[in-house]
Length: 92
Image 1 (spheres, rainbow, N blue to C red):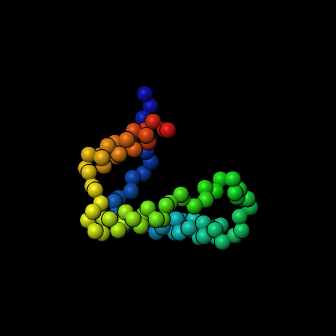
Image 2: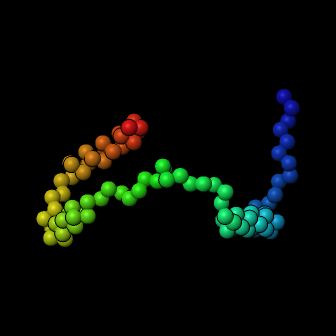
Image 3: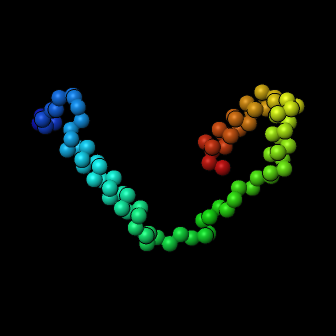
């Protein structure tokens, strides 16, 4: 079996300035790319719109939590967490 050549080893120490300068120049290119107008046309078909949130229900729940009258049942919370995990794993 032929030997595997790894090349020269470098001592552990401070950051090599040449590597830092190379990474900085890549960042400059990324900033320039963001500043230039994009040639990609975005479609409204993929826009999900606003989240369906019932603001009145949210206000009601917040008020109940502040008053201390919101029922917190640990078994229901645990069941919901487990069900969410199962749904995420199954891909549904």
